[in-house]
Image (cartoon, rainbow, N blue to C red; front, side):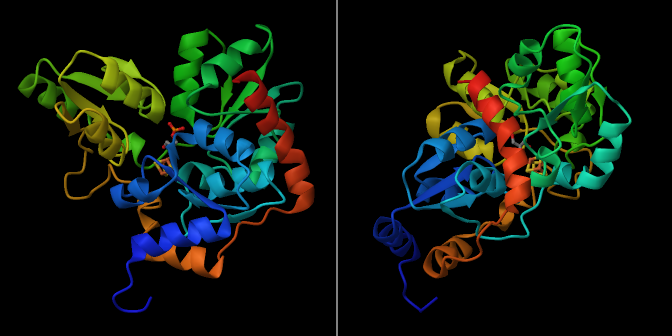
Length: 311
Ligand code: 13P
Ligand code: SF4
């Protein structure tokens, strides 16, 4: 990048010139969210991709989000600033192993969390996000046997809400499973009026402490509309950018991980997206996300089914 380049202004100029749309997840750095055309949770990002008439989508998030966009918009160029931005949940569920799991449960409807690779989605009947998992599981007839993967914490939470007995894959998010019950309780003692917000990827004991459990968008909405002035937030700390921006007078406290020596409440994959990488990927239109057409053909159906049920 040439010295003295106004990177932000150049990114916006290239977007206009190339008819490109920049989308970001709430977990990316604040500077990325501020520069994006659209910031959302996984569900809103998929819905926006399906509806946009941009020629290029730059997906500032993790790889599975870029893949979902490519599957929904095969004719568009889908760029991601860093192809290494993976997801521990998607990695916990390799398609070949998931296929063995599916075959071991004949007659089961396969419900997969959106945090999966395209190849795993291709083995799936219906995709869900944290924002619509309950609605989609409840839309299936009550006696339907279901396999749910890969997040066992979200699966357990949905089983509890719906009374279903879905068979769970044993994946977990390396960020959300680290929150410490003891430290959250300590924070609650120090801030007795604070409400506790938790993402359903957290472990059951953390979820049981929460005043509100929901997707990133649902937690954000609650934090804006609820009367409380203080919140303890048990999800990736990037969401605090939008919370603080939307309610500047309120106090948001990130829930601490059990290991205080690491920044474990940050998703290292999401933080791979930097301003410089965003600039370069728009300029060179690289790296792009590609999905094998035969995989995309199978994976598009469960994603479309999700969008139809949750529209
Ligand atoms: P949301 O669907 O709530 O945005 O969550 C995505 C995610 O990766 C959570 O870790
Ligand atoms: Fe994946 Fe966890 Fe990062 Fe979300 S926070 S993208 S589930 S690794």
